[in-house]
Image 1 (cartoon, rainbow, N blue to C red):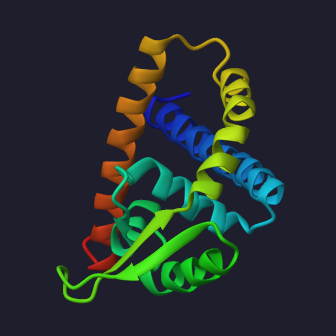
Image 2 (cartoon, rainbow, N blue to C red):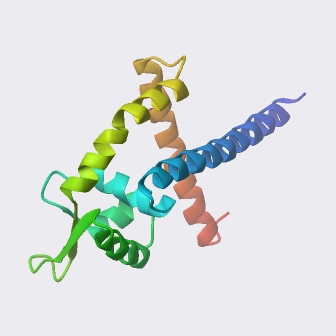
Length: 160
């Protein structure tokens, strides 16, 4: 097998592994969401908020940007999550009418309750990886994500 064919085979295998990981992560997220009686995108919004919020709430735009979910969809889902008691929403005057969202204490408690189970499952998923290996993998995945964004941009403007 020639070098180019080996590289093509390796890239193809990588892409299929990413597809498999994406599928498995979706199933895992769906399971967490079901435990709280919400949808997978709603779970993802709550997890994004949990990660980004420093205790003062967070703009819905920041949630949309981090989670890569359209801002209008985030807005609609946060309305629903507010009705379910998972978060509060308030329009702020300091950011030109920006919407700030914050997890309720009840939502934080529910997330904490799932925390031990999530940590156990994460340990299973990363079995065989030490801290350095995870850090190295994250660096490589960040580079791959950056490069794939560049490819996507080039495709969208017709360069590739």
